[in-house]
Length: 419
Image (tube, rainbow, N blue to C red):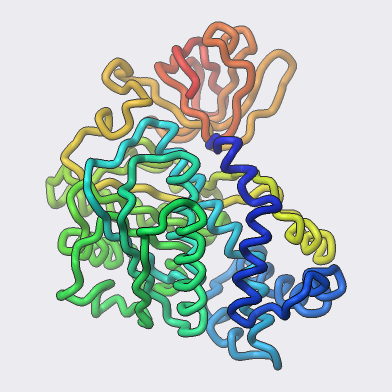
């Protein structure tokens, strides 16, 4: 995944100023520049960040029981929410914006409309909706200037914080006519994701939501989602699901994708198209191996205060990993939806790099995934030079790949383009 440089640099100084002003206005941060000092961050925020970081990013176990009661612990819940808002919200915002930018990179264009409706489940501080705003600002798909976001969240204070922040950030990114509607609601699978009277939406965002359905069978969850999309997602609507990059959570998303594909096949419907990261409906190569999983990584320029927190907490968030899935509800073909891939002339051999590329002499070695599953492969510098490619990395898409060898050790003999 290649994020545009203006997006990767969008969270430096000016972003911090907006964030601090908002936190002060909403009583989360005492006024005065000294309150963003190392002393304040270390005393008031770092302990929460260290604990939440372990909960979200390090513990390879179910996380659902850890977060909800944690909001009610401690003598200063404002500091807890401030820690989440200052540290985890910007990361998730950037992740979502990076997915939006990937759609832009592959040529996706929003259908012409006067306005749109979006919904974000488990919205928290509205990182998903704000991530779409950042993505549309720096890598536009043509989203209308007028829109509304329904924010659904079970924690009332965080929901109020997210609604206010989204309205502030939308305006800063040039979307003054985007608005929010907050809904205080806990998701209950048997009751469906939305009430029958809910409207149809154009964008459906779910961030880190699978832990709310730990005991749900992937097939049951897939059926429920498709029923909701049939009823509450407009044609040409877009679904974006983000999950952690940890093995357990990432494999849950892969299992959900597999269950969705089964349901699509049962319905004999071509209305839903898996776009990213898989570029198609092939069986998942990572899911085939019980010890494997699939994730993306993006880099960014952290806000100044963020670098201070990383130093104090002995963390390093220069690189942000995550797992994701993008689905379109459209009767258009994948070639029409992603014209940047030039699929009409690419009959076979479409591969995506799903690992970093390591130099091995005059070769680069990495893992690729496509219709024939996941395999380890090498390509020579000479072969890349022939398609005017000087470097290669995770998320790159290779067109018209010709391979020899088996999945454990393959060589790319030729290709026509690296995107």
